[in-house]
Length: 140
Image 1 (cartoon, rainbow, N blue to C red):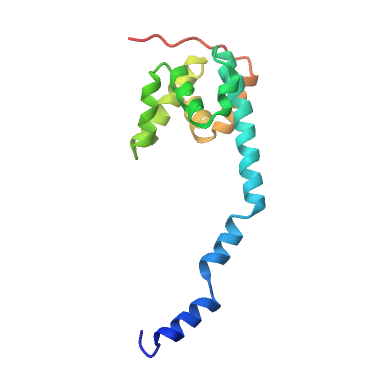
Image 2 (spheres, one colour):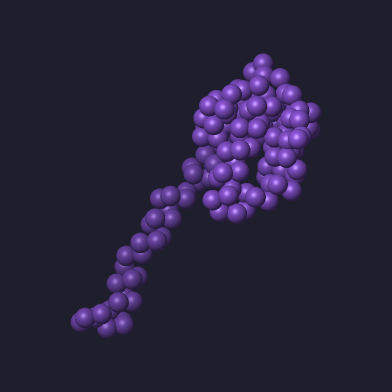
């Protein structure tokens, strides 16, 4: 610290707290409300998808359980949802689950990739409130 002693550097740190202003600008009340609204809308869409697949729709409201049920709708064991905890594997597995869920509702691979993986918010609304019918995937 050429030319600065500890007292000067501490005084400078008290004048310009960078992390506090960043936290105030990124994580304010509006961000929290927007995140809550997003969660509620996705839960409503998934509720309808779960109901079409024969599962109780209320399970879409429980954060980890909804992922397990979605994996089961895709035709995999609920234990396979643990793959979401492994970095890189979770991305690949989420694409596979999106493809399988889309196929179970009669949708193609491109539709499933774009509307159930990239823009899942819209895709689940289309599946849940549209005329898509669920067909249970056949296990090999």
